[in-house]
Length: 495
Image 1 (cartoon, helix red, strand yellow):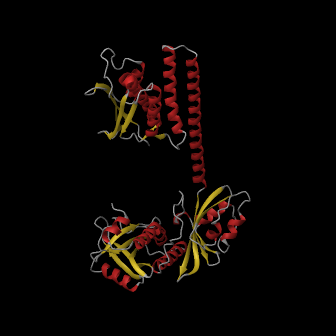
Image 2: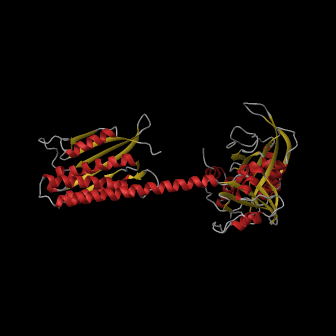
Image 3: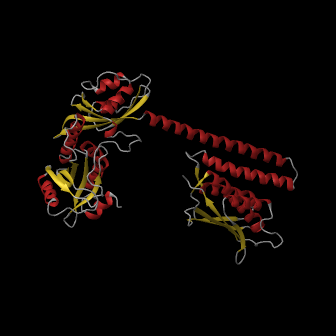
């Protein structure tokens, strides 16, 4: 399915600022649909001079009209196209009391339709249709009447070019309030003229126990703020309904998210609606996650420090021994402990149990070349990328790469020096698993017939780790000279 921006740019000749305006509208039109208890469909005139639906939203507060998505549908020339043309030409809202909507699967429906021109800068850029299911004839409640009146005001603002609000902040935090969470209607002075039951409950949880209707929302909120509580600078704008802004109020042991939408007519503000949602539990869980993340990072940091301490002790012990196998063995152990420490160092910098493995490999590669080359000229080259890996896989792979590169330098290149080339590839097997394929190749003397690959401690460690990763490893000669070690590994899913 193409995005709204792609549909608009591919089917219309609307300029960029009109496309952005329609994107703003669609980004906020769930509010209108929920207040209207109605489906909304956005229509634009294409370059072939026909009306086509490019967006569709259903209400979460009432019975929908269209089960099938309307995006891509062309307007019916017999009726809908004429009404779309009329609404766009006259720049006024047209209402059709009752039409019958037929469905391929299910009974026909009686629907009220409205055609609302979307105006920006004095000209029509699209037409919004509102489709209300006339599924009941009962007397509407005060909540429904208030919602519908507010939705009508917003629709008039759409036709007047006053909605959506281009100055409203973007990037909502999780838990942004919606119509079903709680609605308060304010007059021009910020006095509450209506509050839904959920909105009243949210204010009660802030600590307000008195009447809500007839009181000033700003007074209700400020009376329940504590001196030690942080106050957002946008709070006065929201509780008075003067600006399209968002804020959060912390009081009474909970947190309430608020969003204001001013209501205007011909540029004059006559009131506002404020959406409220109690997000206290959500914010508490977020704090717990942040604490957990910080604790995990601290654990990795301490493990890294402890491993570095172990490596330093091994290094000190090795210096007290004469040259020989014991000293070399301690140096090998120090290097392996240091490799694991690098993985925990990378994990301590992130917020989850995955790491970008390429920097770890590069650091390990540089360290091995520096220690193992003994002054010989050793060049390295890398093709491909490891990407992000789970911590468990990263530790094993770091050890494998460290051992293979060191073997390539010490036993392949020796004192003559040369090049070590890494090739990395990732693919998905027929079971949907991510499989890593890596080769470490040198251009040295080649495999020594007297020394069978896999007989040393380092290669035995590699074989064990590769087996743990459900992979295989092989060594083979390279023409005209050199050795290539290939291995595969089945990676754990990142999530």
